[in-house]
Length: 619
Image 1 (cartoon, rainbow, N blue to C red):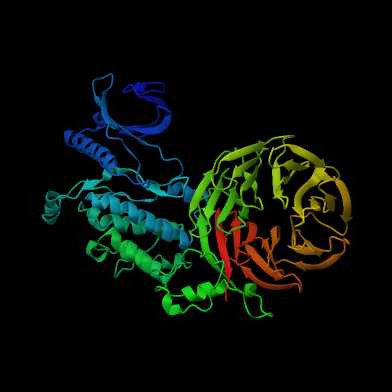
Image 2 (cartoon, rainbow, N blue to C red):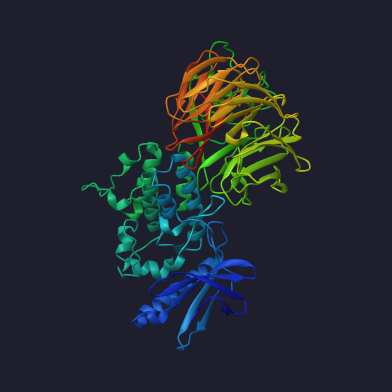
């Protein structure tokens, strides 16, 4: 009997039971400080000798396969990961120790987010990852035979991992000959995902592609494949109307994977990858070149993808003085990887790094050029509410409801300081222009910190018992403090002196931002934006937003565009005229944060739908 505390093979200390079924159990074990998973097969539970032999064979096959495959999308098993033990009755227990992949499987992940369809950009990324994994599996002349959402895990890095290789089958000449002779093999069936030939005991490599296609029907529609009817003439699943957000090319590829006959499907994972390359999808965001060589002939450049020149031209300054490039905008890319609300966003001064903070307690550092995760910071123990990057791009500050502020080296992710003086839940962070001080707001106090030493310098007094939001002028000489009661105050952060109190605020302020020249202060409330002259305290302009709740406001460096998060949409305004330029929709839950980057040439948004979206103006 396997119980917690038991030491196996003088190496694996059993921690706890993870799950059990009729023929086996799964435990968490410690292997010299590394947490792993122990799978145990109870072969004695099988009634027939033939069933027992087959179960042991499949279990041993899983151990052999996983020890041969080395890929981030496949759980690792060491060569000695398989062993047998004798229980108290003399029966053999077949054991397999493998890497424990932390996270949710795709079925759990979808359930947690309300079975919302994933965007096309995410589908393309995940489909490529799974095709790469199958390329490794099929290269070993193996068929997985049980691909479905519950057998696909999401690592903390965003990489998918295929699990449960117990159904794997080696493709040998003998096996293929049996298929030709119509000899039925072991049948593995997962309703809605298993292809017709496998249900009849004739699985082939292309059987995995059918199950892969059905998995993406589930991901792209949020519905189980069996919820859809089939065309009575062709047998094709009628699912496309439930995924109107994807391109025809991607829908065609999914149907290609799910063709009724194996010979009509892609024959290799490489064919799937080639199809993905042909689907129109945004390439990596190019960084604006420091010098634009206007005189160079286009013939001197290598061949570019279609649309490359228009993409580059969209990043160049417009020659028109009357038009605003943000009058029209389009979605450039969607990033996924967080497991909860994306509350905070910051972009490095060089435009290369995007930092996002989430209620899932993690901070992620992304390459803004490729959309890949460079680093994940996991030290906070509660939701992340604010992130900020120093003006020199060297230091990252993160704030959390765990009542700490952490300072990191942005380039390496090394923790530099943890600020804990007078503990308070952190709501907002901002660096001074010289990067030497950091301002934070919490439930009760506004604090000023020394970045180099982590020392608390001063606390701003006044109406801070209900303060929630702060904003620093670009010169760092003034701090605006907005409170739940609608009060808006200006303070000198160096002396702690109250400079001015604004009136006419009838509702709580939910967002706050200074223009880049410091001459205008914007405040957002439940359904309106107000612009103020911070010198006189007079209101310059006010305009109403389409949706209730303005969670975030940011000024574009172009000096004339204001972006605000308004419910599920983003509104772009010419703040000088009060004219709404356009609205951006694509998030299916509330937008929590917006920020301009690349000198105002892109806009990044984070949302309660757990995604980050990158937008750009249309030329």
